[in-house]
Length: 242
Image (cartoon, rainbow, N blue to C red):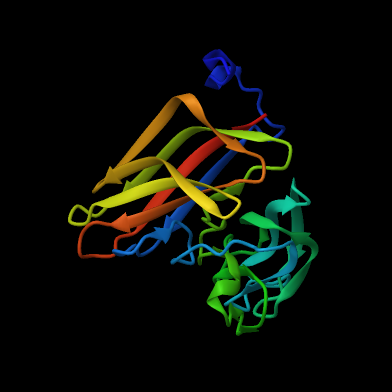
């Protein structure tokens, strides 16, 4: 493939202009963790399934002061799709669509508090007081007051090729440098295609020749603390589809 055919300015944008994934983990330790609000390893949906949303706060409800409705973004049948759901506090609300990947949850409407009053989860299985009972059944978490889940995962739609054009990361802890790695995951195999090391700073890297990601593959972010602490770490990537 000629280099000119994959340069940033030569890639037609998707209808949404591509996708910018942002992930954040509140406490990264010496074992590699995904950059998402729930922490630990990311749980990939194994097969398309109907998910639920619930909050740890009763105020995230149609008549509450927190988030009233959410919009869930992801893939259904290999196609980018979204679904809106009305929150019912700590009581789980089932989605109508069977998602095979969740990219993001956003607060769509809110009460006087303007943001989500509790942690909002997207999950399968049972929950107690709005919090999922099983950690491996959580697929996205919107932390209190965030208004969006910081999941840092994107699956390229079927029939498309994604081109990663930019990656970045941040850690504000001077005593605990972190390594942030960007992975492609396809057919159960993952490979690292970019890595950053930061401490008390942020770093952003643009690709002169974008990184191609095939349809059906996931892009996600992991981080490892190289010190003795557990700092908060964030990372992001931008991907264009054609």
